[in-house]
Every structure is written in structure tokens, then in C-alpha cells.
Amino acid sequence: MQMLLMQIAQSVMGLFAGLSMLGDTPEEEVNDFYNRVFKPVVDILDAMLVPILILVGTAGSIYAIVLGVNFSKAESADKREEAKKRMINAIIGLVVTILLLILLKLFTANAQAIANWINSFNPAE
Image: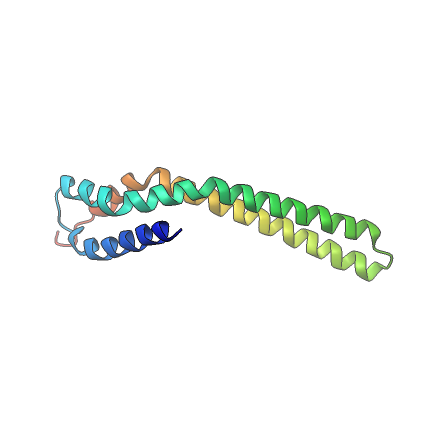
């Protein structure tokens, strides 16, 4: 865990140090910058996505099942409404979390193209 945090910290520090050189560098330097800074971060995020997705999906599903059981066991209308609201909120939260993880996966898959796109803007012109 400490090595993971150390790699993340080194990558972030390299990112801040290298952002100043992105504006007017040739393609090779952008690729070098990407391989030194973005690639380790992208690899770490990519490795963490599947376990996080499994964990969030499992926890959300179990929570939705527990809320469904509470809804079916509720004796009063107030308790049913409260369980129903919680179920709806849990499902919305689960869907939003999964969509954000999918967006993060899209970012990690296209990080090289994003770095090249950022480099294409030249404020001096």
C-alpha cells in the first residue's frame, strides 16, 4: 500500500512539474511526458477500477436487498415510504457510481489521445 501511495505521489509531483512544458513541446516530448507522468497514474487507476467496481456493485446490491426486505416487512405506511425512498436513493447512487467508474475507464483508455489533444493547443499562435 505504501508503494502504491508513493508511486501516486511521485506521479502527481511529476505532473505538476511537467505541466509547464506541455504548451510548446514537440510530439516526442509529449509522449515522453505521458510515459513518465500519466502512464503510472493511468496504470494504477486501471488496476483499481475492477476491484472497486466489484466492491461497489456488491455492496450496493446487498444494501438494495436489505432495503427490499425492510420494505416488505414494514408494518406501517410511514416505514414503507421511508424504505421506498432509501431503495430509490440506493439505486440512484449505485447507477451514478457505476457511470462514473465507466467514465474513468474511458479516460484511462484514451489518456494518450487526451495528452496529445492538450498539446495541440498552442497559446503563442
